[in-house]
Length: 216
Ligand code: G6P
Ligand code: MG
Image (cartoon, rainbow, N blue to C red; front, side, top):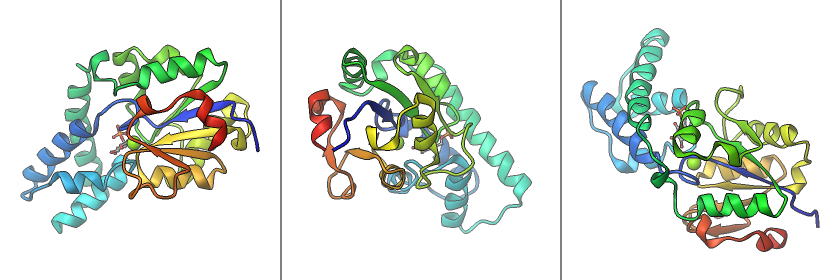
């Protein structure tokens, strides 16, 4: 069995709980367009890129828009979202996330971010987590989004580590699939029923420790 030498982390739902901000911003947009957007709808957008999320939302509302209109709507949503994450604080880091990142670094393993978000730099900076990552790969660096493995493969490449030596931490089904497609181990964060393809599922990073990574 290949030794684990690197950890690649999704951001939203693994390190920070930004889903609530995405929810508020998408809901405001849907309401302005004349329909509602529920928390259940928001669940389906976990790990899904901004453009794809908007396409799904417009579909649920039964609304058609031109590409130019869609671009304007996506940036309107993003402006509201950025306004909210601007004031994020280190206390919005999910339980155990910072401690686990520190444990990973102290054990001599490498760390990378593998997120679909184009706002990851701002979030890591606001929460003070930037120094704990060796490599950052996010929505600004990839042409195909999860479940495509590109974001995780770029992370491994950036670290100079083969996929089989990497473990991914993910809360979204699309992300678990991306990690498997990349040939990596994957720890799911959330429900074992939903993330049933992961090698192990935990409730949060507070439940996992470095010695467990070589038994996945
Ligand atoms: C993450 C979130 C998604 C979000 C995507 C893009 O994967 O789970 O809900 O749509 O990032 O985020 P962005 O910040 O670029 O709009
Ligand atoms: Mg996520």
